[in-house]
Length: 214
Image (cartoon, rainbow, N blue to C red; front, side, top):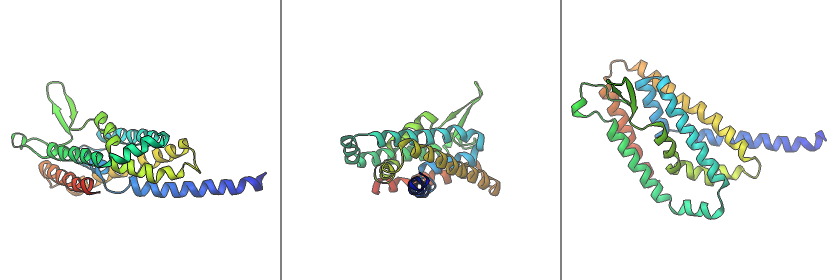
């Protein structure tokens, strides 16, 4: 029995290793999600980045679960509308860059992911976690990766296993981007909040051509 199970276990283990490497290359590389997390960590620290961190990963996991369980017809429909997904993503990123850019009326105030409401002592997200959750469903990078790459592991691994591995890798690597933002903040204490916001906005603007021409 051990002899018969060993090849299967070895096959599963090798598939998991490859999947981890693939997911790390997809999730860990620069993109809109990681840019937003880095900027939030840079401006507000780790605690206030947690809602965005959770929203991104839950959204991505939900989207991949839908795509892996979708019928062939639905998958063809999604691929045929990939250009529209690219356009929606590009428009959203442009809006986020515009919203993050310091405005003339608030030049003396801190421009960041949170706008303090002095009357209610609350913070308001420029993009709230719910919006960021649903953004994952129009994120063409995740759709293409799910349909073309992640789906190829379904023959060797269960959907549940794929989603568990994805959640672990996602939270770990996305958290590193938040920590990177905190580290950059410590290294750039002389930069004003307006300068940091402008750098973040420009970074988001630079992501727009990627989605338009990918």
